[in-house]
Length: 327
Image: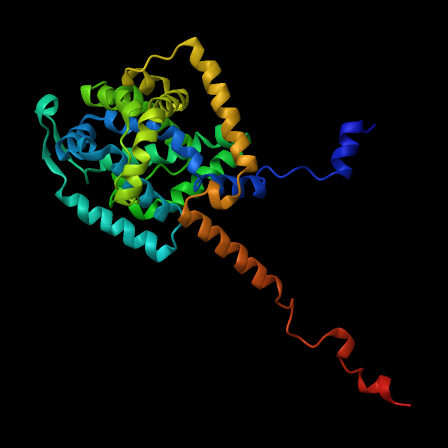
């Protein structure tokens, strides 16, 4: 005798394991400004000594850390939302420019040799960037990914970053999410370590300068007084949100101590992020390149919707066979 469950299964098709609408939402998230509150999660990159030594040696954190964030964010947007030619060109440009990033560290990293195009460091930075997007999706949107959707989301990001891969097996991104998580866990527990640079810069998030890139000098001067008032709270929000999504082994290296009160803070921040996700229009929610690409794709879909299903002669206009036309 068939059970009610069996009858329902026969009558109602099972829901797809990967919901196309959720993957579209994930892609939109990859171009959202909301992920900026988790920017500190990318500090896992400088928990790897050669990366920290290189960044410290170049002095770009010292000049204006916010400018470095703008540059990294712009490059990431090209990878995620540019067309194939622009993604390829950006990847080649990055590889070319990073050839010069090699040498020995200074101060605390005096014994550390670094080379940006060493697959060991290059792959770590790419995987770190992928997980910043992947692990913040639910917090920003309120949508839970199913296991197959999480895999599909990872493959979406892996395809976007494919042009950044280096030759040889060591320079390739993990082939699936399981391999990527195993790789990250191994790096977090065996290769990363606390260093003064990481601790200092994570603490410095509460004193972020305004970027000089993208802000006209007069506007920057006008905004500075207000920014000096709000930046301690804004930086603290970044510290809390970033710490809550970090791998526990990495979070302990930052020097930022999570306390029970941060759970309540984080819950409030998440509610605000999800409210913004629901109510803000795309033109405010998304990075300019992502927004324009999304608009382009929607307009293409509209244009294609006007097309005919077939250019063949319509059925009602086809002439009847000669045998049917005889009197």
